[in-house]
Image 1 (tube, rainbow, N blue to C red):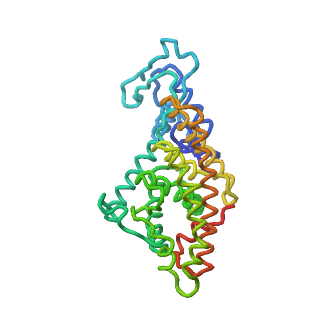
Image 2 (image 1 turned 45 degrees about the vertical axis):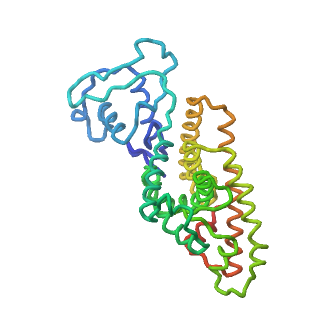
Image 3 (image 1 turned 90 degrees about the horizontal axis):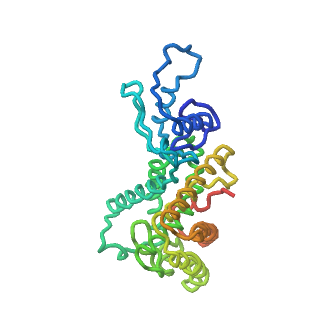
Length: 357
């Protein structure tokens, strides 16, 4: 159960930039949508068992991250009195920041934060893997080398999620692990399509380091423990359909859509906050539902601001079905690797084969 960051009440959800209960969210909304008068702290005159005064409660709301810009204004926004209001007193006890008033569409702050942190991740990768424009695509990795790279990169992704979502940090260790493992394999599929777009190459797979996966023969043969177990002809017969599926049914449709950063990172958030799995608690599922709703609203607002047709919103969300089907194909492929004794690092194998349905 996630508690309110303002009053510590239970059953809290994401409101106006922070985790808060409905009562504190309503208090914050009323404050933003009302005339600002000078208010003084009255906590000293209250009993210890009583709630904090309005001033202290509002300061706490702002301290935990609640933002007036995320509150939708009232309907009568043409009233001149409600165009802009400034806080009253300038004393340290009662001074609060100025609030721009009026009906404001939801911005895309969360998605933009994901974009920012993902770009930081790309710079970290460049440093770790010694990536340069001249080396990208010239290096090659086989199955086992790719799995080792995933082992390193998953730690970077975990840090990105912690930096992006305060709600993730507040979860217990088990819920964090469940949420991340549910997410990672689907994210990897999405990122493969992003890298194909980045390098303008629909005929090859690229790893997070910018290395190109070897051909089918070299991708599996170089990692098999017993080379006599399966011939190269059998490798092609068994695994080529999976490669063909990913090229034709996953990468090609994404390249045709030409998703931009806002759309890709909105998908990142929606995939991460997926509460539909059977291995998560009811409380975590509610949080996931709230976070997904925020991301979808931000994506919709972005399309409205850029005068994008409404069909684009649904086309973007439809790619989740492509990713889900591709994940099942990846699980089948990893199972076959185990059957034929191909070596895969356990961390990558466990994340792909993670029980969540």
